[in-house]
Image (cartoon, rainbow, N blue to C red; front, side):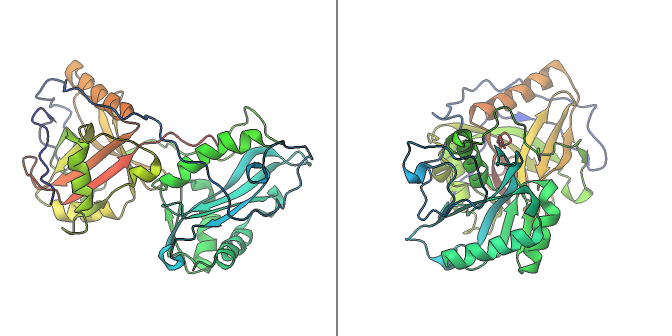
Length: 375
């Protein structure tokens, strides 16, 4: 079991009020000047994806000669399951169904279905014309994935575009699958970023400068539900070695929370690297952590313009998690925390404790704040 000892130079805030912001209070310490040892990669990169079998695109595209090998053909589709993976172990999928910056021979944007699991043992892509985009098409495609790759339909499907929620939800429910709106489909997000550079930009129908048809939402933050209130909070930091221990012991100690497979995501972090985080204390820590555990926690942001902390959950839900009095000191502390998070490639954490001086957590989430994909 990891001993979770927060850095002695942590930045504390005064107590939070469960019914009103603490705008009259201020931070009690100076900005944390302890140096951060940053990862060698601030923008994680995935390995190149290679198809196990390639099917011809169902969408007609302008004919053009390619010098690359067949597996590098950007008009090809991908249907792959790692031969060493037990098909029954793939119980959750990550899915995107959206247009791409590619035109077909009609001059219309091509749509693409991209599906993977968090370990990238399953990878599937298929192009569609824009006149067949509906829940029936998606339902049939998911059944095809199951049949072609010999995997059972998943228990859950995560997706990150709110505009596609109706279609995806309907398709999933008809197949007995639980749809999970969440930006915690990080393998998918990073794969899309890679595909933009290695596939879409090389496609003969690529349209440079084309903006995403379904841009990600970034709505105005709303009031925090009463059951999610904490009593105290602090900007903190932990060496990555301690974070690994905490994540590895989540199941052993029945602690609420979630980790990330950083090796898979291509993020290299030295054990001594100090990772920024937010510690929240509450006398009702366990119920608070239990509520948080069902929210698909995505990220925490310090908004210096509003003088508050913003909690992002699900796809597009943003809460004012806490407020603070805007002073030069509090602003510099918040800016330093955000800068540390950015320098760590967006990596940060949220810890829920019974007391800020406790060595243990009842909830621990490792988070990665990624920019939206280019498609």
